Image (cartoon, rainbow, N blue to C red):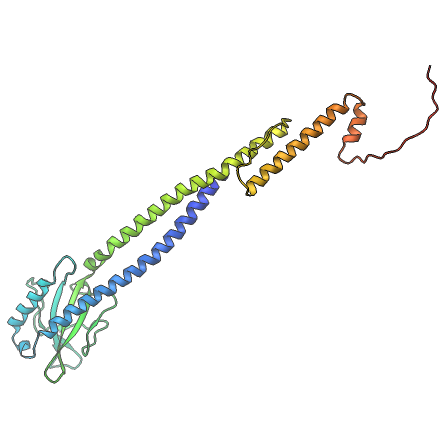
Length: 289
C-alpha cells in the first residue's frame, strides 16, 4: 500500500472515530437533558391538573371527565402531547390498591371504567409529585408517566392525577438531535478526508521526489539534486541526498582523473573504501639506455 493511501486511511479513521465518540457523548448528554426536560413538563401538566381538582369534584365523574378531556386536548400541541390523562384513587375494598376514578378516553378500546384496578407503576409515590425515569409498558402501549396528588383540605392525598406521554412521540423529539449528530459526523469525515488529501499530498510529494532522485543517483546520474522546500525532517533528508550526490560526483571525477595516469589496479586499490594509503618509498638502482 502506498504511503499516501496509508496516511489518508490513518487520518480519516482517526478523525472519524474521534468525532464519532465526541458526538456520541454529546448526543447522549443532550438526549438525557431533553428527556429530563420533558419529564419536568409532563410533571408540570399533572401537577397543574391536580391543583384544579377539588375533593368534591371526585364524586362527579361526568364533570371530572370533561375537565380532564379539556386539559388533555389543550396539551396536545406541537411541543407537547399528552396521550392519556386520568385520575386514580385508593380502593375502598383493598389496601394498597388504586382504582380509576375518571378517564376521558372515548375509544372503548382505550378507555377504562371507574372502579377498574390501576396497575402500579415505577416511581409512583402518591404523597408527592413524581415522574418515571423510563418508559413503562401496559395494556394500552408504552408510556412515560407523571403523577401529582390531589389533596383534601387537611392536606391528605385523596386521589392522584396520572399524565402519560407515548414513547414514540417522546422519542420523535429526540430524533432531530440524532439526525444532526449523524450529519455532523458525516461533515467531520468529509473535512477529514479533504485535510488528509492535502496533508498526504504535501508529505508524499517530497517523498516521491526523494525516491526518484535516489533512483537517478543509483543509475549514475550524480548531477541529480533535490529541491529543499522545508526545514523539517524531509528537508534534512533532501539536503543529505544532495550531499551524497555531490560526494559521489566528486569520487567519480577523481576516479576518471586517475584513470588517465595510473593503471586500473592502482586506481582501484587507492579508491577502495578499505584501502589505507601509506606514504613510503624505495631506492632502486636502474640503468636507462
